[in-house]
Image (cartoon, rainbow, N blue to C red):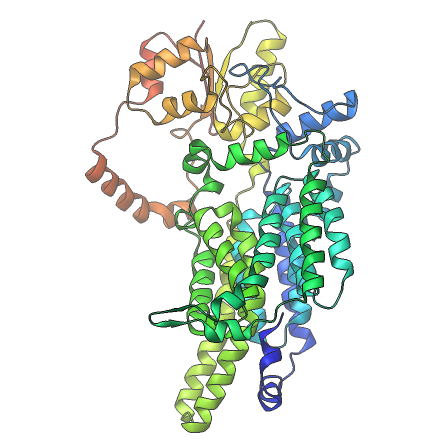
Length: 545
């Protein structure tokens, strides 16, 4: 539904008085798609290793994984691979040396929503919002199964936009959710969007009789256009059918149990970066996008139908609570922002008619408009220039080769390893003969006897109790530690210039609030007979015979 349909004919003529040059759309299309491709090539998902290994098992055995075979901390634990179909395809493409096709597919899935918005754009201000939104979601771009949910969420939201005129939508949606549930667990967000759409249809009548101090909801209710009863019943049946079709997967109802467990896990929400609050992101584009959205929302929300307002608020809360949901909020927010910009322009034109701007004011406005376009483009270029290549410098390639050689030569027997969380997937793929301590599948895993690899991992890396750390390593039988070598890294000159002052300030604040740094685990283990078996700029391996 488009709020602009409620404007008068004269107001529409004013708003659509200018046409957007095609060349501008081409330029922004090229900028966004090339940026997404660059990021997808550079950024290797830390979980990609276990995705490939699981995909290999599925293709070779014809069976989906049901019990853990990759870790020594929780062997046999029953788990659900909600991305099983994607994992199988990823391994097949890797095996055929067609990874460039995978990169192209995920780049296209991430870019297609932006292409649709660019095609619909009616003026440069829309393109500015689109480019800003592309910058804000860029940290989430890559060859990641989550991108499939981003794309399908967009498809479902577009189907709701046309649902009032196209009845086939309600027939197709259950099929979409069936496919989605076998590709990625993010289908639950699509069901939330579906539910909010249905609830929004029955709210307007209640609002007509509901008046709170300072907030008059009558106008909001009057702006809403509800569906005919017969069509609403069809939509409700489609929603129920969509839920039922998501149960048609190899795990059945256990798929929902996996999602619920992950969403309610305190370890996931507290320690996994992509599940943290948006406030912890530190991303300038994300914060600017939120500021622009909130400015428009506060000024114009009463002029929108509840069918737009309700899902927008729901996904604003979800996106603010967890960074993982922020790209979904962007999809919901974009239609609102486009029409809100036009309402803002209409108000500006009316204001100009009453009190015309001076020549100097117009010069300032033109300068500001140019700056608004130059700054995001320049910032995007800066991000691309300083983009970290996780395919080369982040993962412990040389350290893994060293371990592999030691094991092959039978110099190291019965390796029981402790590894960093971000390297778990990489080790599963490149060092399959050694079981990992933890990887990206495991943050919410807790056995019936209370065994939790994540609990022990957090205690080792976060606790100040050195005795507890040593006891966990001893109880788990760990004799090999592979970890990021922070002391051995070379500091990039540009990174040093960028972070030196900020790092010193943060370090001083941390010292003030939390005291001096405690002795680190490496130093204590070296005192207890552990030795440094290998060390380079990326990784360090400690070994205890």
